[in-house]
Amino acid sequence: MLISSKGRYALRLMIYIAAFGDAEGKIALREVAAREDISLKYLEQLVRPLMQAGLLRGVRGKGGGYVLAKPADQIRAGDILRAAEGTTTPVACEGLDGACQRAGLCSTVKFWTGLDVVIEEYVDGVTLADLARVPEIDLGVEL
Image (cartoon, rainbow, N blue to C red; front, side):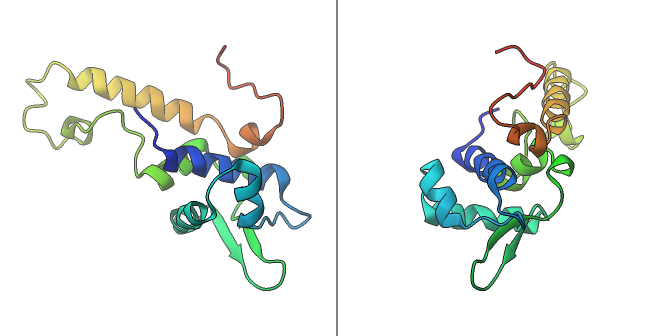
């Protein structure tokens, strides 16, 4: 599975808000853009699907910005990636959805299904709170 810049930057945005939000958890996108070296216009596009997924909330008015819509320990990395990317499936295979007429004959459906399960379990096993713990991050994998 190849995560695009949408998924990577959405994770960075959410981690930044979780780690560095003010007393109310609020962060201006301008600050994230400057600190993370991501285009402000691109961040503005990323917040829409994150808000639609119920992960972010906009705060209007003077000193406005964005806040997490729920606690960081209740937001999974998979939630963020699915909001930004649409899916975390490793391949475009109808067999993963049970919609393929050839699924019974295809020798790879079991493999793709197993890989999809491993990916889902991993991305859903890491919370935003885990990722926002700076600088030590233990994701259960030795890098």
